Each structure stands twice: as structure tokens, then as C-alpha cells.
Length: 108
Image (cartoon, rainbow, N blue to C red):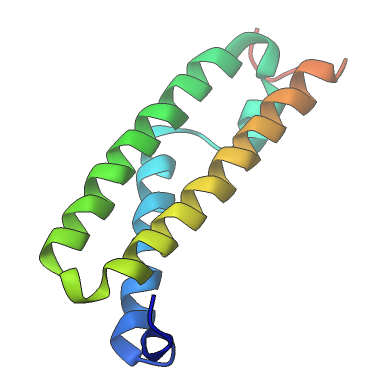
């Protein structure tokens, strides 16, 4: 990525839009990392399935954004990738912490 990309107003918007769509798509498909942790013993596999489906959908939308705006492909891909990695890590942590916990969940 060229150094000129940084500091451009439209590149920042493209970065935020790309990151935001990943969060929105995953949120639309899942409950939350907190719910994953609380109910990991009964719902972790189902929730993680929807996280993974959300990541696939997000990749499709981020790829579409790149096709529409080739000039800003780098911030679009960077924003989407960063958001996807953060959200995936949050859900993996929620699942792992919930499966280690002896606290009762909210679903039985």
C-alpha cells in the first residue's frame, strides 16, 4: 500500500465501512461473544457455525466493495480483515472460556 493512502479522507471512510460491515454481518448472524461464553456448553457449536457463516458473508461483501472501489482496495481489505480477525478471536475466546467455566448458562 502506498504511503499516500494514509491521510486520505476517502480511504479512512472505506476502512471504516469495510470494518463496520464485518461487525454488522456477524452481529446479524450471531448473538454475541458473551452469549457464546454463557451458553458454551449448550450452544457453542451452533454459535460458532454462525460466526463462520458470517465471516464468509463478510468476505463476499468486502470483496464486492473492492470491485466497486478498486482505488481503495487496501483500506477496504485491511478494515474487513482486521474486523474479521478481532471478532473471530472474541468468539473463540468466549467459547473457550465458557467451556472451561462451571457457571450455569441461561439455556438448558
